[in-house]
Length: 229
Image 1 (tube, rainbow, N blue to C red):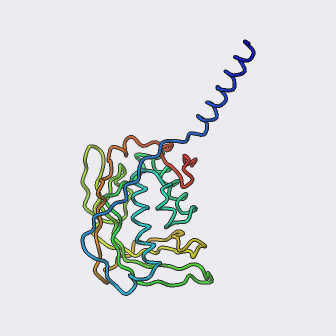
Image 2 (cartoon, rainbow, N blue to C red):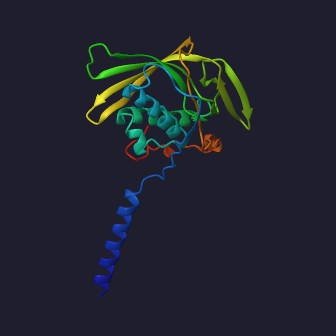
Image 3 (tube, helix red, strand yellow):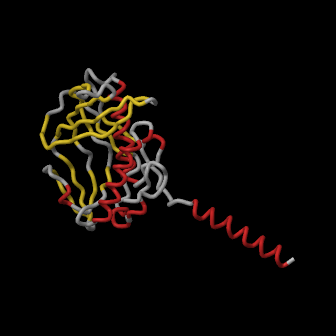
């Protein structure tokens, strides 16, 4: 009888151990709801590749605010490789804080589209070229910006508000599941918007305290697991 009881106890313990081992880190919720002011205009706005980029920036910067890159909405706009790369970068920035720092955003960037072109010798890859300005952001490392902007300090955190637009590229891949952002490139080259543009603000503001509380193991990759940077 004791042997049966002991075996049962061992079995229950084993099940608990498996369940605990299968539990990943708790992911913070992603708040990607945006209130828009203004309207995006221009001849490229009806292009599905441009729409994917617009959806992507909303999801990507919302993911930055929660350190959570596993939301299905991000997977519908970006490749896993891109989402994983961003997640690893965030974990690295947190690890180096305050020399470097994670960044929290008040909204997605604003941009006008200047061109959509096929990448050289890559039939399934396109570039969406934009003139972009980042939304106001919060960071512990004021030296993370190369642009001149308005900087405010609050309890050791810095709010940076950009004054200029710069040129940027988003790389689009024609995947079996539709267009996905697969990287991109940015520059310090200033530009002027060619059309009207919308300015977005997340209806749930970023939690600035996260900058001080952040640890690398809070960053969740596209697979729902802790990013092992």
